[in-house]
Length: 123
Image (cartoon, rainbow, N blue to C red):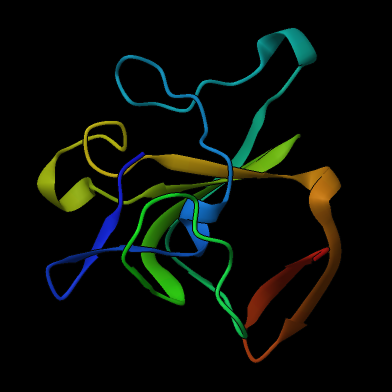
């Protein structure tokens, strides 16, 4: 698992506290065709932010960063997948950062305020 850097030091963030998503050899999201998973939409320039105490460190060491910016969100029939957005440097998520997912069954509350959607999961 790749870590982020904060002032040149390793760090971890909300997206890295999610389970990793499986990618194809070319770095595209691997859908679960056996279970009928279908991609519904994709959005770039998504921010994932954690308010409050840091999430548990997934063994990455370093400092906590409370947000991830410039992510690509892929919404499927089964899950939300957050991937590093590497369009500017022509690299796939697999080669630079990765992808992580949140299964819809883990979303317990959704609220919209101030121009964006906020997803809350159980603690």
